[in-house]
Image (cartoon, rainbow, N blue to C red; front, side, top):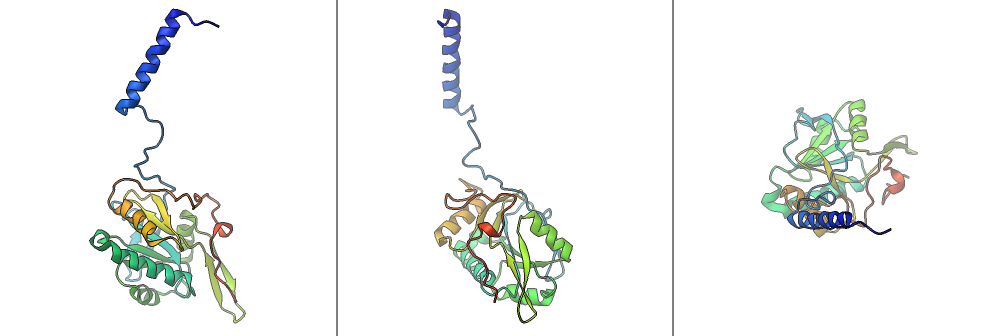
Length: 227
């Protein structure tokens, strides 16, 4: 079918306007690549090892990190906290005021005193948090952290849990995460992007899958060995 001269003229005008708008940055073709892409908003209301109430709402306005674990964790938790402490040292003055909140999944054994001594062993910038069982479960669910107790032959128990360190931006949005096995350079780049409020905060690298609501053990790169 042949276009009428009027329609053809109108079509050419629309194309021209679209090109001009794109050149001027008027037309948005999707989310800005420079803007942090929120995965979800994790929330918690817990108590620090010093007895102070700490909640996600009061932390808005600053960037921070969150990691779920427990002090009896045989390998992943101490390794993750030690690596975070090293990253924080590498960041130097950029890390001033930037903390990792270590939320224990084992409030039964992780008393305030135990938790305080444990996080202190890794140096400054790591804050231990605990709460009642339902408060801890609510926090874990909000961050989509699956966890479960595994009974041991000696009558004790271990806790299987997700190993991600969640990076939270000043608006309270989880915008990225760190995983064991990530290179030091990649981890530093993610932290610097949030701390500097600049450039691009990658939601997840091409080698890591986005976190769906059902993020669980099947997607973990490790499982703690339970005797």
